Image (cartoon, rainbow, N blue to C red; front, side, top):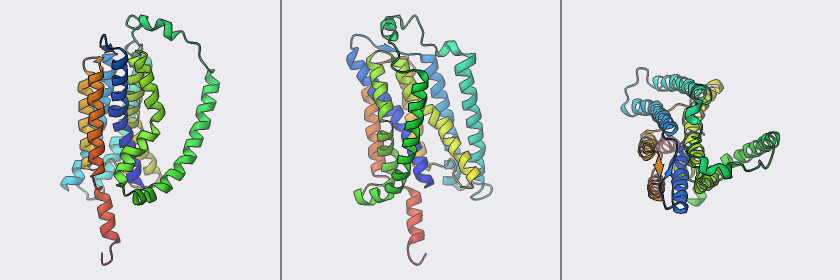
Amino acid sequence: MIRVVQQSLLGSILSNMLLVLGCAFFGGGLVIMKREQVFNKAAAGVNSGLLLMAVMGLLFPAVLHATNTELHFGKSELALSRFSSCIMLLAYGAYLYFQLKSQKTLYDMGEDDNERNSDDDDEAPEMSMWEAIIWLSILTIWIAVLSEYLVEAIEGASKALKLPMAFISVILLPIVGNAAEHASAIMFAMKDKLDISLGVAIGSSTQIAMFGIPFCVVIAWIMGRPMDLNFQLFETATLFITVLVVAFMLQEGTSNYFKGLMLVLCYLIVSASFFVHVDPTDIEQNIHHEPGH
């Protein structure tokens, strides 16, 4: 079910960038009406650049496929995807080194700006590091088990609810899957800790785009499955426009409730477009399954 993998990864990026970030900006803006909230513009800019690089990685295989300009039909697209995936993983590794080692000061939350939060920052941790790791491990295994059932149920649900598979994969699954991230991003924004909200929303989008997607392509390559970076033109165009909109919103380094509202409304447009979108791979499969073909 390669298309479900592609679409749910894409949906996670879209919901994090538009819905989660939009709700965080909106919630934070409503609580702190007197002034604009500020966040680390430099860190947000690096993430925007990485997301645009991810769009580039997804765009070329989709365009190759759509224009039928492959050198070796059916092979060039897959080879390009695998090469691009390795480059994206390399870039993500370099980004982690840049973030954690060489440019650590860029990502420190700006102590001068956040002195007003010093009272909140002194909260005692509710559990130790090892307790947190054990809980995360248990929950990860449990979610992996639940995912098995989810994948088996998705096709039946699509037919029973008369909803397109693309809508379930891109919109419904990520909203449910990102519920915890969603809640924490809004809570941090309402406490005026926007850098953490951005880390949750944009950071996880960057991680999925630059690590999750290429990692899946490499794993599929090892398993002998033909997963590529061709997410089809419709999905790739949606991601491209989303990254551009969010990059423009982040460039000033300030946020307010109106910016949040715009991002949420953009997500409604994206949701509506996937509701009326028929996946081209579904059409191809239906043609092959029809008698006489």
